Length: 157
Image (cartoon, rainbow, N blue to C red; front, side, top):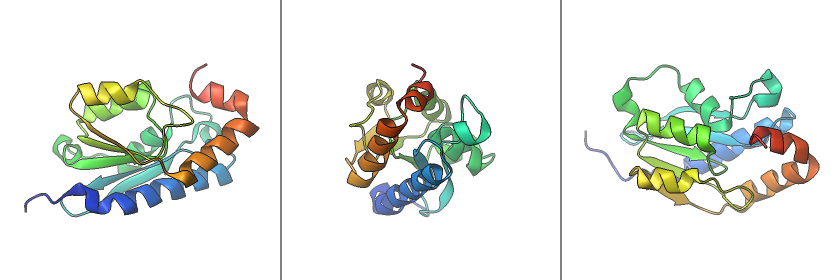
């Protein structure tokens, strides 16, 4: 089976990531969500949201939670996927994207936080698409405004 244009699943990936961010916010966590979609068939391999506060974890960011919820996959599977994330990926999440060879990342917004990881991903050959989604900007801004110390903790400041 030949791969199709992964952009055809962007609306699904963006909405799924946003739904995960809303779930995170409803759990009193950081509203960052993610989703991993296979390019071959458009199947969602997994989705997740930041669980740092819910699980007391220093590393369970939205992208990492997404990968965790995919379960174990062979290395070749990742190389035919798009990772959707509601916010620009931090250095840790950027490293996971590179480590697994995920070739395409769709970032719903990078206004509230823009990681240097975006440029690093591009340098490493990853296609980076920023969609500037209003819903994602709004939910993240609300969190940062209401819980600035929790936000700074999340990004290691």
